[in-house]
Length: 152
Length: 424
Image (cartoon, rainbow over all chains, first blue to last red; front, side, top):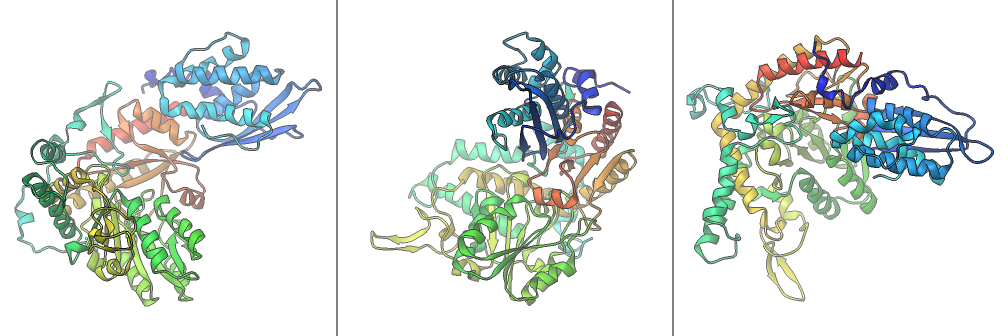
């Protein structure tokens, strides 16, 4: 059986592992902010919840989702990458991640973006970019105090 | 053979054609020799839009290169030739669906526009507030949203007839929706774009008419796979689109009984749809022109005409038999795959198969298939309420056409086995 070598740039081991066994897919309660993201074209749904530290950083992020391997892995890595960061850093990270998903390249080399780099392969699959960015849209909506992510 | 399929005499011209030869048919579709990601294209997404035979491409190109002008306007050779070609397609469409008159064929942009035309014109002009429109739980968004807009603008009720777990219309539930006599229009798909289910249109028509309502049938999928006879079906409106029937995009059809079209007010105003115009008032042209405001999709109509000629030359019954065999083959092959579930088990079904796979989301399945050259659709298929009814968020869908081969289905099945182990 072939191992689909040509899709390994997208489905790296870390992606498959995170999709099969997500570490942060659970109901976070209590929480300080939450927002949903929906992709009506494909039926993917994600809800992201965050809890704050006393100095307004993200203490913990978790998600509930119905979606593909890319969206689950993206949400799971995101929840890990934003832990302990202030909002401004998260917004910058989200912007860098969005550009990476579209072009494969990043503007920075922070530990957080390095953690997300296994998702850079999605840039070769234009129809799948939204799968990777949907959890981020939900997270930013939660930071904004909105209940639902804006459609991109 | 289905009761609703046209029965042809045993020795008509169709029988004298060469037997159905899929290899020869494939030669007529230039795109099928394309490579995708370095692999031979296996196009299993015809239900979304079908590929085009050379005859269609040539007809449109030739019209542009040799006789193009606007229709119904010029007193010159080019315009007369183009008008003849455009109007000739109306006859071809009428014959394709056995419409009683060419004047009952209205050209639109696609099925969606045809349904919107009926929702605006018949819905606002003929239906009364307090009446109801009845659809089914397996409709495409195109046969849901226009009726919701009508409901909100005009005060008609929108009812939804239930379906069974097998993906068939619940006929008892359907009849119940008609009981109070308030339904003025029933709008149903002829063949589900998700489940492949054919609806029993003749029975639906009998119940609809007994309840004093009119019947609109969305033939987007069915007209591609089966001989359609709108009179035998008992439909009052029949709508479909050209691009799924191997024709170009931008051309669709509304057929309705003449008495309905005559009673309906125009949908859009402009040139070509008028009798005379003054600043005080205008009068309308006769049907079908009353519903064709502005310069129509001339080249696209000519392309549709070529597509109908092509399908007729192959023979709709032969196409139907070919696809029916493919569907049986695909169901057998896919059913063997561990962890794969085919959605819908209708008795009467066509070449559209939706499925899910344990441990693999439809998008991931579609991406892996794509990398092997196989094009399928994944998602909600413009039928979100149906997906909710089935308890699904998305499915992958393989759909077949005139050019699909059993070998392609075998390759799909073999690749799906590999996809399954990839995600395990």
